[in-house]
Amino acid sequence: MFDLVVKGGLVYRNGKIEKADIGISEGIIREIREGINEDSKETIHANGKLVFPAFANVHTHVSMSLLRGIGSDLPLMDWLQKVIWPLEGEFVSPEFVKTGALLGILEMIKSGTTLFLDMYFFEDKVGEAVTEAGIRAGLGFGILDFPTKVARTPDEYIKRCEEMIVQFKGHSHLIPVISPHATYTCSPSTLRKSLELAEKYDVPIHIHLSETKSELERVKEEYGLTPIKHLENLGFLSERVIAAHVVWTDEEEREILKERKVNVVHCPESNLKLASGIAPIPDYIRRGIKVGIGTDGPASNDNLDILEEVSTMAKIHKGYSMDAKAIDARTALKISTENGFSMLGINAGIIDTGYEADIIIVNTDSPHFQPLYDPVAQFIYAGKSSDIETVICKGRVVMYKREIKTLDEEKIIREAKKWGEKIKNFMDKNLMLE
Ligand SMILES: [Zn+2]
Image (cartoon, rainbow, N blue to C red):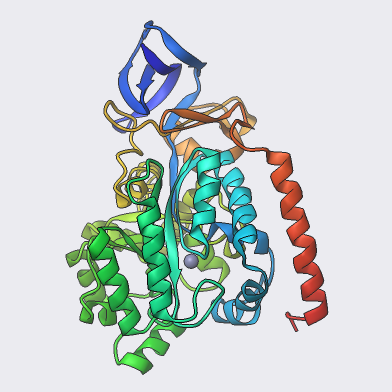
């Protein structure tokens, strides 16, 4: 007896598409074969639809969904210093974080994502939203050297972070993560304390790394080393580290990343929009560095759509390297599914027996899918997230035929609009974008 059977789908397994039923119980894929006829509490008929692993978005600041669209055409440092940090100083609160997270999660479920790795303030509120939604997240507790509403000193951030780790360690859907923001916002002492805490509780570390050229110059000026060499010098780099962006690297640094087994999160659309550059991802992959993909915060993308992100990734690297095989469709799919889940130690992102059931069902009836010759390539290059009809996280159906089963979509959008009004009023009074 299964909890859930997905019947009659065209399932992506071992790099191929095969017609099969999937039997799931206790959140795990137990059987994949044609003609599963055993009893099941729930059955989904996926007749002729594509069945892929769900996406993992391994770098975001989900609650920034409420700041989406502000300061649209600024480069990173101006955008942060003139717009984002002042607005966060005014508005970020547990309520802001919760509503922003719910809004972002709606969007992520509707585009097939069941795991995200966050970095922000009041992550316990992100955890609440994730739990209501029935998906999963790495809760990256943001650590900085300067005071915010969360803490005044680095030691206070570390203390609060430890409290969050204790609260969520061992949770079925939430993973506590330590997130020192970057080498230009955290001193060597703060980084060392973050590392010690990560080792004490055996949790991942999530950090921004070598995102822009100006970051490199700034860190070099202060410490005489580039961000990656600076972290290497501090003994910070290991398999535990999930580094976002990693756009600016030289030969020596790439070898350090490989040697230390650092996980790299590619954020192509954020890097394009903030004019940060194009990360040398095909080179990292050739070297054997593990690469995942992230949208970055929805205020620098400006959405949380991983299918769009993956399509952009595959295309920019082909164009930039003038090599049509730089990142192929199957590699793109692996980066956005299996690699992301494994960075957080989750046994999902692959459809096979023994893996946790994080699955999406894709309707291919739309004109842009016709005729269907190569389902994987057409999903990556022509598919739209609105084709994703059903989303399953750890065996639980969180969206069925485009309807979110776990959250009240209308209510969340109403709340988000109210925040929008407040923020607009504040900006009008303070003329922030002059
Ligand atoms: Zn970021």
